[in-house]
Amino acid sequence: MGKYDSIIRSVLEEEAKAIIESSKVLDLDDLIDSIMNSMGRIAFIGIGKSGLIARKIAASLSSIGVSSFFLHPTEALHGDLGMLCKEDIIIMLSNSGESTELISLIPSIKRLGNLVFLMTSREDSTLAKLVDRLIKIPSFREADHYSLMPTVSSTVMLAVGDALAVALMKIRDFSKEDFAVFHPAGSIGSRLTLRVSDIMKTAELMPIVNANASLQEAIFEISSKGLGATLVKDGDPEIAFGIITDGDIRRAVEKRGELWNLTAKEIMCKKPTVIDPNSFLVEALELMELKKITILPVVSKDQRLVGIIHLHQIIQSGITHPY
Image (cartoon, rainbow, N blue to C red; front, side):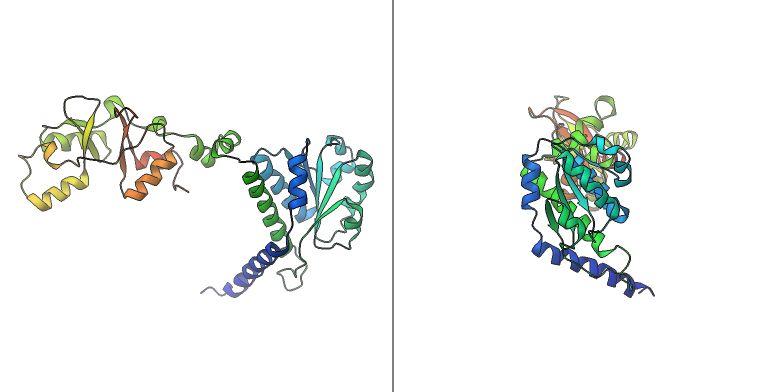
């Protein structure tokens, strides 16, 4: 137990409680319907901590193909209002509803004719009376002992933004493939775009021995190719009917003792778990975790052996967990 644990726990508990309470009363139907029926973009406006939350929500919606952007209120007052089109929906964030920078924008926005939402905990505030529609969140005491620093309120706003993004994903049938279009780089991009065929070992890099090969030959192939296993073929080089791993050799030693007279066929696993070359790497990792293995022969739909893939290759590609 750390000496500050009670403070940390108290803050997290207050914020968690606020999110749960908000989920019981929050109504986003009007906002979601407006977004779904809109031909324009979504402009998020906020100042201070609310501005930072507004930026994040705009980024989240953009990442799922809902064209959104953050408009800084001060810059908007000095010309950036020209970024707006009449069809754009404006979502303002202000917990108090008294942000002077946002209030100052209202007359110009009214002249432009945009639909304006306000996320606030104060439905009797100045801004609440000036906008078209409200996204009402409950009013909570902030987590600090003075109730001054935006903590609980900003966390609730952030959670509401996440809920909005996920709801729009489901309503718009946003798929993993759609997500990959907007996330071509980074770990998310790797998870959604890289396939087994992109990194599997093939041809001379693939460890493989004949079924009648000696154990010594199998061990040499395992060691020289550095994957901790070798495939076993019988006749047709494009068809593997078994695999020998380091573990198979250890188990054979424990069971039989003397092994040097054995062939690869006698100690191999005859029906190894395999994967299709078009499978995503994340699917390969999930299969490895499920079967508690570290290597997979890669077999095409017509049952031809085309490669082999090891857990380390997947991790090196940037994918470290299947979810």
